[in-house]
Image (cartoon, rainbow, N blue to C red; front, side, top):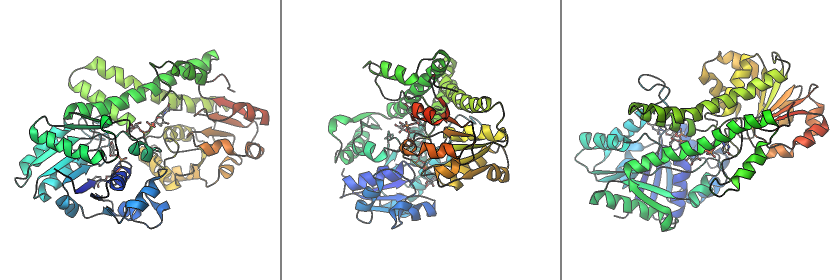
Length: 467
Ligand code: UDX
Ligand code: UDX
């Protein structure tokens, strides 16, 4: 079976870039991305490529090439489903905020809605591909809905988890380490798998396309994210010991990373990992383990989250204790709000928790982030429901310049590792701050020796260089 039309439901951080690259690399396939959010679709269609709803280096070029040729963004979900040979589901699956599994299980309501909509609209056989990260065995639930509420149409369900990291999405999509496709062992299932393999084969070498059964594929995604997050929590746990003993976490990371069995990536100590996936996927894993009565397994993985929470709280505690145990009425400048550099995504960003803790201490915060707007920051804080939205707006301000954010502040906290922070005129920043002036580098990116020479008192995550 040769795929000629693809529909993707969900024009977010995953669906948008992934399908833009599919369209760019497969000019003979018509790709339509649909979303219930009309303003998001309008932004994807905007002539001004700076207004795309997702910021990713290189994405504008890909969209420019394919949009209008074989890449379309639309709110007409029914039409796109009807036309498509293959439908990707790329809607969000947040952690449940209510009922059974609250705070842990994935909320699959959007996935179920998509499945029902596909069942209602489809008149011909279709391949449905799970792109969203899902708990193991979701595919069988989708299959059940499709087969029992449909119009006698036959569906094949594939799992094709996304491994792109935000900030490098286009690069990761163009040159993936591997593409994973899970499907049914039946003849029909194998045909569906092959149809999707053929799509990727347009630009991904065959040896990098891996096929498995559906459940292995679903579980591999959770496992990959759990292992990556575990590395960050492991190195962050060591960062605390470094600070106590005078060892330097960057030196430790380098030394262990040169062991080829360990490898050098994902060993950067930080104020804590964020992003839409790590926490959610581990909570999912913990929930699955608990469901099967595997409490030791659940506890093991939960510890990765607990260390991450500890790291965020430790950072804000350190700011408070260093500033003579009170930050009330003091201005603290935040450099960075995004959960990592080169993205405008803030979901689960460490900055949110650190800000929340400091605002509880009645600090005033001025935030500068090159790509995150102030409305997003307020939305993140309001969502916590810790204080009223008026209070959040009173205590925290967004600034469009780092110099303005730092002016008259007592301390600067680096929450995101944006490269531009290294290029600032730090003398100028220092001159306009209250003295003593502090820098708390939660990402370990600044040249502490230089800052100390200027007169700053510095704390660098995981290092002896501290105030
Ligand atoms: C999401 C999940 O967070 C991630 O786990 C999964 O791997 C991929 O999907 P992301 O693309 O980053 O990741 O989410 P988001 O940017 O929130 O985009 C989801 C989009 O789906 C939103 O634009 C939303 O409007 C849309 N949506 C949601 C629908 O079109 N229909 C729905 O029923 C629900
Ligand atoms: C992750 C996975 O990498 C990706 O494969 C999956 O598809 C989605 O989840 P993402 O969340 O976009 O991607 O970013 P990632 O680069 O993994 O970073 C996650 C968090 O860990 C960020 O907050 C980052 O700053 C932090 N991190 C990462 C560290 O603190 N130290 C490191 O060494 C690496």
